[in-house]
Length: 304
Image (spheres, one colour):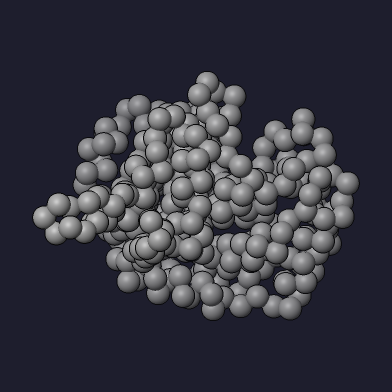
């Protein structure tokens, strides 16, 4: 199984150059059955990464370009009355897929953004009193531009909390960018992508993540991090129990990617900025320069 995961990472890295850590974190998020938010400037590869991951994992894929005039029905679907049968027939929206790319999600209004909440949390949607289950597996990969750009609506805390991880790709280094400029068109390369695993294998890997061992000492460490976030003067509010579960689940997925059957404190430290930073509000907001800066105070927590 570890070889299959490495093939996924290698193939994705052929299109997303110089970003292996971001690729591994994205894959860990999906293995942990979480949803992913990619936050960065336009043009750095957020949409391409989503396309490549879906195709490499052999998953059905839908892309929705969020705009200010989009309605919830544009995502979830709508029931239409059919005169011949005299009944309403549900026409599913693009959310009924295995990977939904919500592109520029913060360009939609809060009402439309909230339409994703039940789908992300419950893996089902309710239309006019009727519940419709979503496919398995189901992931939302959302992208958003920085909030200072024109025409954006910041995601509320309740929606941010639905994302297991938030990542920023950043600019490529000089070597990777040179290879990108001199290389083949990414759209042509994307068209040739072949699945490295299938959905059934992915679900087996997700089940394997849950079996990765977390010792009592490791769980004590996670609890110490949670307690610190709630008591330290650096933060206005602490991490919730759901954030603790997310932290442990993502650490298990990272350990599996590293080829281990047990979690180390280093696994928790690696994924902590991407799981915790968007769930915390700093007492000094001017210190929020990066996810790593947000979680820097956690270095005061003793490692077992």
